[in-house]
Length: 408
Image (cartoon, rainbow, N blue to C red):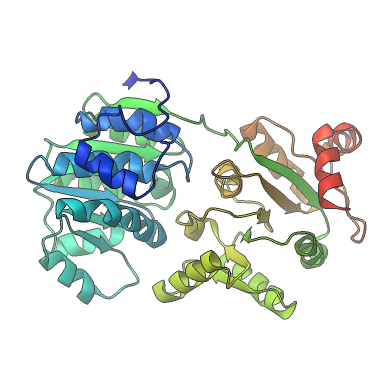
C-alpha cells in the first residue's frame, strides 16, 4: 500500500479534471477543493485504486464522484457506489445527479424500506451509476434485476460503518460478482483489520490518502460534559436548549430512547423529529428535510441512522446518551463545526460513566471539560475519576471558556 501527499490547490484546476467537468463544477459553485478532494481526485482520474481515510462531511462524494464520472465518460461500463445507510445513499445520489446529466448519465438508487417498483423502473433506464445499500443490492442480484459484470468503477463508502453494521458477508458477495479488472475506491473514517484484508484481497496497489488520523477532532468544535443523575437528564437538556438558538442534533443510544426523548421535547414545546431504523423511509426523509428547512429545530438520532446525516450549519451536538463505542463520539461531534464555522458539543453523562468518558478521551487524545449548571445539580464521576475531574474542574482553561460562553 502506497502513501501519497499532494500540494494544496486553491481551486479544482490542476487536479486532472477534464475541461467539460470543470465547467460543471464551476457552475455548481464548487470552488475550493477539500483536502480529501485535493489528494484523491488526481489519483482516481488516473485509474488508480484509492483508499481515502477521512471523517464524514469532508467532501468524499465529490472525491470519488468526479473521477468516476470522468472515467465512465471515457469508456463503456457502469459505476457502483455501496454505502451503509438509506440516507447516505440518497445524499450521494443528490450530488452525483448534479454532475452526471451533462454527460448523459443516469443514476439509480437501490435502498431498503422502499418499493421495488420505482427501483426496477430506474434500472430499466440503463443507469450508468448505481448507488446502493448492501442488503437491497443483494436482493436485486438474487432477483437477477441487477448484473454487476460491467462494473468498471466500484466505490465502498463509509466502509468501517458497513462492517460495524454487519455487512461484511454482503460486501464479500458483491466483491465476488464485480469484474476483477476494475477501479476500486474505498473510503473510511478508520482503518480496522477487516478493511485492511479487503484492500489486500480486492484492490490493486491501492494508494492510501489520510486526511484525519483516527480520533482526530474537528478543530472548530468545543466540548463539555455535564454529569447528572439519570432522572435529571431531561431537565438539564431543557436548560441547555434554552441557552442556544440554532439547530441541534441530539444522539441517543437506542431507538426507544430516541422516541422517548422526542416526545419529551415536543411536550416542552420544542420542534423535534426522530430518525432511526424503526422509522419508514418516508418518515426518515420527512424528518431530515424538516431539519434542513428549519421546520424542526432538534433532530434526535441513533448512531446507525445518523451516519447519513450530512447537514451544514448545525450549531450544537448533544450526546444525550454516550455512544456504545467510544469511536462514534468522533463521528457524532463532527456534525457541527463544518465549513469553517464554529460548533459546540455537549455530553450528558451519569456518575457511573467515568470509564466510558475516559475511553473517549483516550481516543480523542484530550480531556473533555466538565461543567456545572446554575439551575441543575451536577455530580462527580464515581471511583478513580473523581480526582481527575476535580483537577480539571478547577484548572481547565478550555472549561473556563466554555462555561463563560454558554452559561451567562
